Length: 100
Image 1 (cartoon, helix red, strand yellow):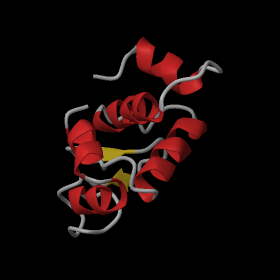
Image 2 (cartoon, helix red, strand yellow):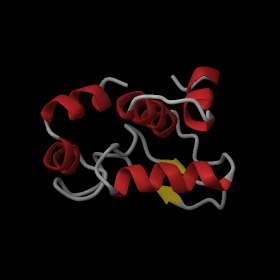
Image 3 (cartoon, helix red, strand yellow):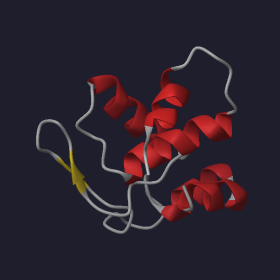
């Protein structure tokens, strides 16, 4: 569940590990936090596009009402899917993101 610690991890100027940063982003995605300020939505979409994060387990809507599909709504191997994250970052990384 996305919480204040995750906000601090994402917004802090302090050094955090890459894993901790993307776990915080994954929790935001999983919690459907697409309606937050624009920089969050762009950060979450960049993380998905780069293969560092999965789409959420459930579809969501962004601030403008656009549908953000779930990880099960996209074709396997495409951005946001389990297969895409595994191909880009490996099985250990995928395991962490699936359990965020």
